[in-house]
Image (spheres, rainbow, N blue to C red):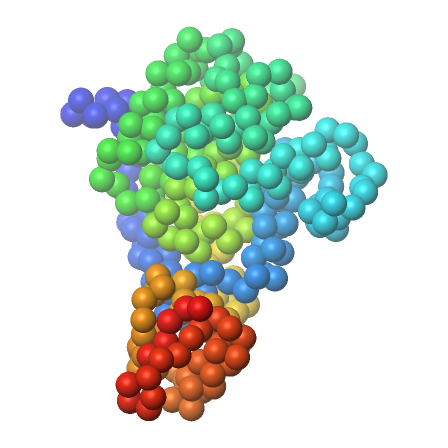
Length: 326
């Protein structure tokens, strides 16, 4: 629910001591992730996490496909399952593969993402609803969304907050997620859009979140997820939901750090380094400064292997040796 504070349309929430502790913990873990070069996990882990993300986000919405079936669809193999479930997964695969094409401050990109997720599933994918809607929980209405004629202005106010408010992205992404659930801007697909767009917001400042299966933790804590949404509705601000989602983000990073206490391979070090230097000339010392935990001999072997694999070319000799991407 968006309120006006000092002429800036801003969703109501409070920065509590618990929220500050979580932000500090998350920031420390992001620093550790960057220090051990986990900001872009191994290709196989990225693939597994993407499958877990898709499966978990859709299972929350009632999809029945398993991780094995989703893997088969990614590999263009035949899967026997309800047509609606297959379409949901195929749409999600396409959408998550195009994460980098979506700009988080863009309302048009937000609509395009909904169209990508919901084509073949709803009558007007990529269009805001104009009718009234109530959210059912069992036989009772648990949430009455704002009237349809207000949706467009409420969403644009929310994106204005996203673009102009100085709040840190960790908190803004959680607030945005809650507000999407509160406004319920689409006839269907609001839950998956809230979760998707939070990832798109986070990855701009913290690339690791592009590869973390946050949705799998939400799925495991589904009752608490909906309870935090309900509590925020009752108190009239996003604070309880922000606290819940920051806990999820903190735990996702903790799981990554605990599961990835292994050494990088030579090829992985080279790939990580080349992504960071943006095709400039460098020396072995530059490489060693990036990977302080390896020896000079290991650095030399890495560079020699990269030359043999035609990833690098070498100029000069001994102290004048320099390297550049091939």
